[in-house]
Length: 82
Image (cartoon, rainbow, N blue to C red; front, side, top):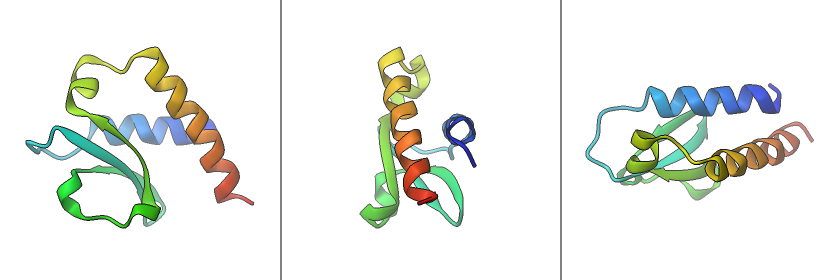
């Protein structure tokens, strides 16, 4: 997995998130994959990669949002493959 693949996995997770009335979502790394869950899922904080709102997902992420995700993906990649 490289940083570009992590970004692709994040995009896929956002696009294919489950139906929910949640206003906020967590991106998590669980069982070697990135997925989205609502905060009601009560996930351990150590697997949370980040969060986003339904408005961000529906209206498209701003450039600053994606830049932040890309920076995080690079840090995550370095941590994953130390």
